[in-house]
Image (spheres, rainbow, N blue to C red):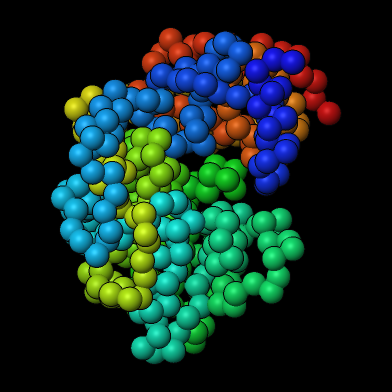
Length: 397
């Protein structure tokens, strides 16, 4: 029995079976490389579910955590924390004038956004949130209800009331869904779990207009798209529209669990003392990591690198599309990449894994590729070579 098998045995005995786990146990990582407990090396083009957006164990993040851990790791939110204040300032400076609530995960940030919208709507008796089909907003009761995929809801009924789902990129459907009880429209600028579906600019502008006309809260879920993933610090900057509320998580902490709900204007002060909280939200440790992520992106010019490498990766993938007739659309905004397949993608994902390349398959037929912002041409060449080798063995049908 190897080391991995021993760990799997422990999981079988002691850990709840809530994930479809691949029998790999990773021990260390650096940049785009990870090594399992048995010494095998992998190229990670979906780092930590897009959490390690500037690569695994980035030196700036590791150093910041070490420095902060020696001073103060946690302090109650009944007191002030300089690191939290500085990170909130940094987020606002890169997004829009507003205020930030910190929590620990994307689902928590989205819960905060939903509560904020309902609290705002309470003064007029409005509570309903319109979300999109194929969306994904988290695993809490409220966020699975907000999610536009039935598979995540099975077995958890009855679900909270007050959510409507409409097709993505369909402004008329949103207009028809708005009713007397509607208070917010919530969506991902790019549906990542939904298959790398990118919002149309005119659609986003139309949503902004509707919210302005009807006094609705426009909420952007940027849990996966924030922190440079789309070539801008936040995805909304690609659309020429500013949301009222934005949620962040994943890459914000460079590998450490942190999330944020950012609200502007009249929405920034809706949540007051006693209306929302998070015991561990915005601790000095995680905020130090978040500040280091911003520093790395800025000082290492990672937005520029993300855009340059995205163009290079797209060119390589387009060459594969020309070569294999079972490849459909290639959809991307910078380093959010989806490769549509006319065949099931699970076997391709598994073969890539066995060949040392970590990617993801979502919606059965979409390969989701999201390398870190500091990915190199050499790493892209290696990843595409592995993918090409795997695709060469696939037959359509």
